[in-house]
Length: 208
Image (cartoon, rainbow, N blue to C red; front, side, top):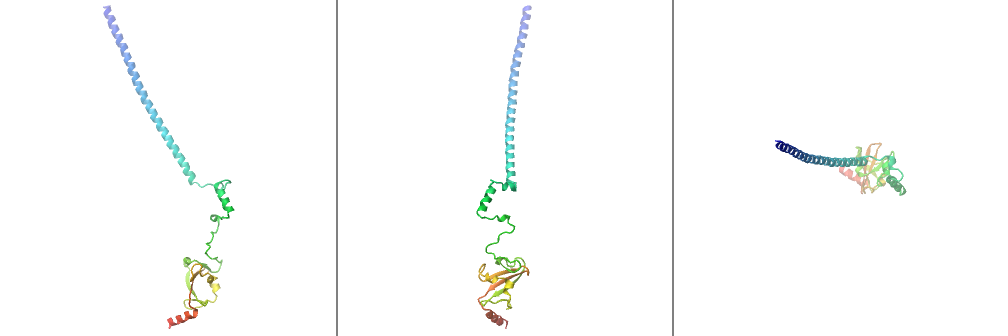
């Protein structure tokens, strides 16, 4: 009887020891699996965090570059000693160049005659009538007489046209255009190969 009890006790203890061993093996296995999952999640999160940080840094740098590109430098920075702008201005000054962008009055074209303050002045053909002024036509004949289309002679040529008769050939050989701002008139003076008497004769023939 005692021998049988000892056998049963040994069997129970053996089963308990075996169960404990199996439990520890299973516990270690699932703990290892869980740790692998945790490490994988941590690694993925770290990689994503690093990628996001790099993208944010790239966006920040691009923003700074755009801000620097579109912001105007201060006037002091433009002309600071040693700056590119200051060097360029110094070279231009030494070579005699003029910064017309800072001039109050833009330079006139070389082909444009000098404008008088009060009196009439010569204008380019394309400027004729552009301001809405009255347009009046005259003719300079071969003998130096100037008259309108009706044969009315202009006695005060310089007072009416300034020195316009000396500007034939500057824009066109057979015409010159004059503007009088005070009167609001643009004059057209055409050169004729006929004399004034020949014009009068033709005018009388057409009238009679």
